Length: 218
Ligand code: 5GP
Image 1 (cartoon, rainbow, N blue to C red):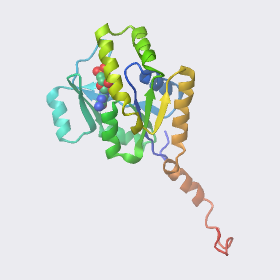
Image 2 (image 1 turned 180 degrees about the vertical axis):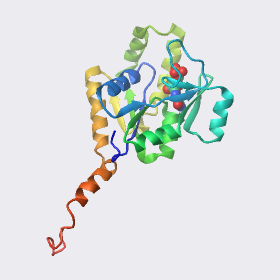
Image 3 (image 1 turned 120 degrees about the vertical axis):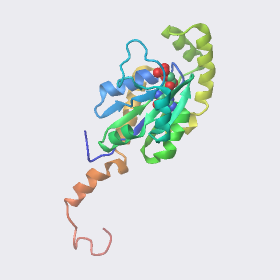
Image 4 (image 1 turned 60 degrees about the horizontal axis):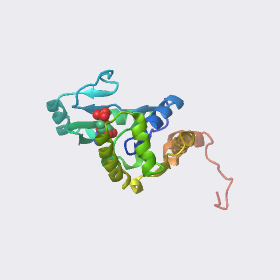
């Protein structure tokens, strides 16, 4: 935890099967100071899920109340259920110097960037080809054929927004992609604005450089 440094919001967008899950898990396991955001949802809890860990599970009335209270920085209806990102959770993490990973689509990414422009780092993950994405979805063995076709159709829509991202990562070889996503996080942590708290203190420790640059060149 680094209270001298503000964290950032890492938004990874990708079509289903694009590698968003594996890349974000890699970051959380490999790097300190980065964690998943826990969204609020109205959908039913699935076996193995834990309230407060995978999601905060709430009823529709409670979700609507939170919308009215502006408790979400963004929210959306996905497959007939509501999903939202808590403003308070995000703000507290960023202030504590934690980077936060959000698993949301391009529409959510847009909404958050609109509200917290300086805090968002958006990475679009692009599969190497259409055939390869289909191969990965089939290999995953999670979906029936018709669900795969639906995901492929949605993939086209998601990918059409790649140019809204700050970084684009073509997820061809996984080892390379791990290195690339780590590099993005490392570089973003060194941005001047995020380093300002720490550096200003260091520079203040040097005091004024009175008289050193009398020609004004300093
Ligand atoms: P699932 O129900 O399978 O966990 O998630 C379904 C979809 O909801 C995923 O595509 C996920 O990215 C999206 N989702 C999860 N949490 C949020 C959220 O807080 N906001 C938005 N906009 N989408 C979310």
